[in-house]
Image (tube, rainbow, N blue to C red; front, side, top):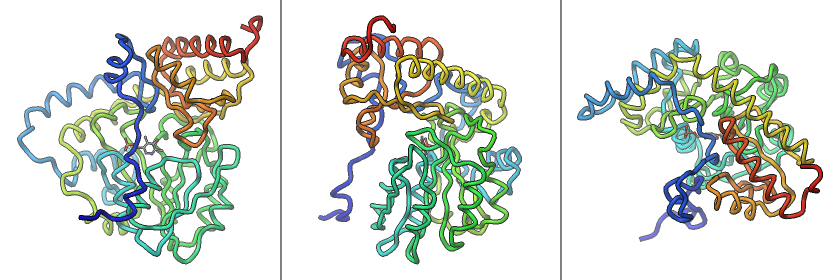
Length: 370
Ligand SMILES: *Cc1c(COP(=O)(O)O)cnc(C)c1O
């Protein structure tokens, strides 16, 4: 038996190290995981009640169409119900789009480095992947436009970009959409939308009226704090969404996830407070970087990519042995950087202290500056 040849060169997704594994491996009792951009404050308290109530229905299949969540989310976003598609995480919407549009002989354009699932799914579909290097952490939109040809099916924009935290501003997005051929799908992955504070971050939903070739991805995994439940969604032109629906598994989002998402949308105060605390946490890291002369990208998300100008795997290991799980930039295309999820105030202080100690020990910082 032989699997598709393109699978030979693919590795399964390498997630942040699981907490239980690190506990066991290093004999630690307390672990702080700031590796997967999860919400350190969890989810809205009302989510637990919604889940408990839904637990009465575990014997029943979910509503594959997610009618109630669809109705409520469409009202919340101000879009038509038919313009939504739900996925088992927005990851699954990436997969559905890839299955729907990509195959051998086509190509797809994306930044490098960016969220790895665009490339992963494109490779599985046998499409050619055109990666356009970031310019100082930002999408090179002109470069991406130039890479588009008659066989291009999807262009992936990740804004704010994972792992740099940079975003595409309103003006750049607008002219990009105007320049992209209308038979090329543009996917704007906005997994960190709720954290964004930049005034010139584009509200992309109104663009859907003008651009039937635009799909926006959002998720309940990050600011909404429901990563465990796997639910995200795409927003697009109704015709396009109808066309890709057959590529969706019939019961891809669970009852529990749908109930939790419905409760989570209703608590926007929680989201606002998480976003505010995230800004404060980012500031803790900015202050640290400035004091130590470290390069970093200003972030519109809930993570920061810091360049320590040394092998990030060693730093990663140093933190891991002390119970702090972060992402080594080595796996993300930034071998001298760490990507750290913004935690709560105390977690941030603790991790900064460990980083200070490491820099001191490795002689990268003079004692008197500490
Ligand atoms: C985390 C993340 C996702 C995936 O989120 P899920 O909804 O949990 O699948 C998608 N895109 C980006 C850029 C992410 O960082």
